[in-house]
Figure (tube, rainbow, N blue to C red):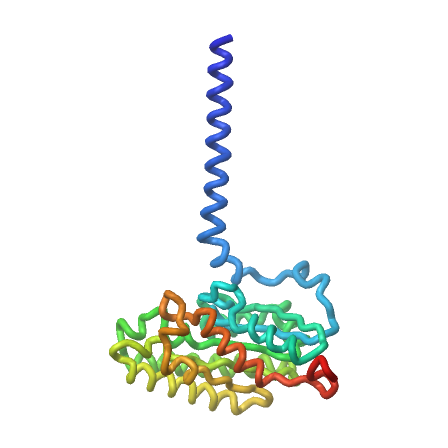
Length: 268
């Protein structure tokens, strides 16, 4: 009996340890892997099977800025745009955020070839987009190994991709207004601020020149929002906006979005 009891206790101990290890794994997985993995998941038909066809459709494209990385509330600028628009219209607003953390312009070109992404764009009334920050800053490589030649080479590739992105969107949907949110300088408080600010301004100017070739593409500036008080509006990584920074961007974008006559506000 004593031997069996010892065996039973040992078995229960092993089982309990196994359960603890499984629980620990899921905790680590949830904390460190889930957020990084979620944006790269391709949209399946199951994700949109019950999607409503009526209402105001917003599709968000791009990189971690459109994902909202750095906003502890989880909204990002897309969420603040939604908050503002709800005060302007009685329509139901649907948002599909297709942005991918770390995405560069070449990645967005490829993403736009996905059948389900194209279907979403075709249904959109408004398209929100950030792209180009990773092409320019390259995870900090631009500053640590500064080279104007390398930056110009990266910009040339980016501008070609931007043409392809806008052309593809316009071919899929001629009516949706595209709000392209341009870059701010997250390194404005560093020693080379004057140099990096000049690079970002030129990058934004060249991007706006590309956008000007296509109808209904609105370039939304953000450079001025962060220029004077960049530390107040950046997340702890000193790159992405924090909650207040995203709110500034969201309010600016929302102020540019209009609705059909008779759907402008709740009082009409």
